[in-house]
Length: 152
Image (cartoon, rainbow, N blue to C red; front, top):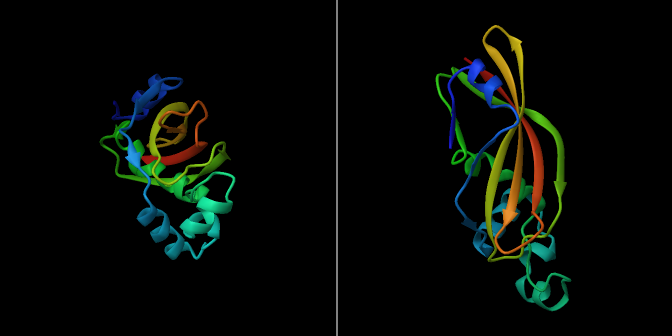
């Protein structure tokens, strides 16, 4: 796990892997709760019997946006920003959902600092590439390039 305590720290870490989170199991309760929260009740996520019988994945799968939404919490195990007055999500440059996440899968996040752009004297945009890995799979579930606006 890397520590970013200043804009200079961020600049020195560009191009480096910041860390890898622990594994998180994706269970049906989490998928159902996400479906309820977002209104996305598509059968491939929430109808276990139908997904087991008809889905090309042979089981229910997590929503792509559920996978994406786990990145902020999991990436806290990869790096920390100290001395910041504030940090906010600024946006995404690119997101790709590469492999489905069947129920019961274990996911983790691998974070890399792609860029650090000083915007103002105490403000930096950290561009982070987060790769969501599936235990036992050659393909990641997702790759997302996220921008965090950090004020020191």
